[in-house]
Amino acid sequence: MLAWLLFFWASFFVVTKAQKHPEFPQWNAVHWVVQNVGDVITLPCFDQSFYPFNNLDSIVKVNWITPESSAYLHLSPGESKEGWTVNNKESYYALSINKKGMNVPEAVVGMYVCAALAKLPENDTLYAWYYLRWGLGLYANVPAMNPGGIERYNGKFIIAGVALSVYVVLVIGFFLVCNFRYKGGPIENDESVDGEEGYEMDKYDADVNFSGTKDDASVVF
Image: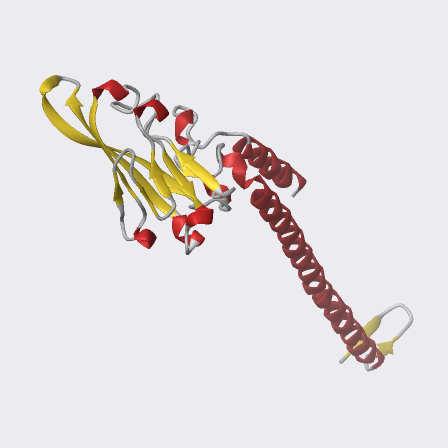
């Protein structure tokens, strides 16, 4: 039993130290989730990793689309409405959200989309729409959405491991108690049976009659 418990804890330690996607560590970070903190929040229409948002000169037109809770407003650079303001190219076409100027500040929570019209990288005569999304206030308190690999679940794994170990010990203890009690029962019964048989044998011996001489004895049943 001790060997199995040690094996279980060793396996648990190895798993908790592993990354969920070690070959793609960038998958573990949820870069598009933005915390809903403060009265003014800024969402840039710029990302160094994605075209055309890493080259604003290639963008022809920009539109910001607000979440469903705000009726999917479409805002262009320099436009402002109900606390939402889209800045110009010098400010990376960023969307500024001023919750103080809104009737319902909770309406800012949701998915924001920066839609950019730009030329195709492989063909500058064709244009396409590209989308950069930001989740404001989405899954901010969910551990699974936090950066990191499987170690984000360490707390739950530890609780589950301790509970499983206690359960295994209880089951083994219960099995051993039942096993010893089962083996103890037949031993007592065997002793009682031996006692009864011994009593019958003594009674049987008492009924034996001996006759004959000292040198020649015969047993009569």
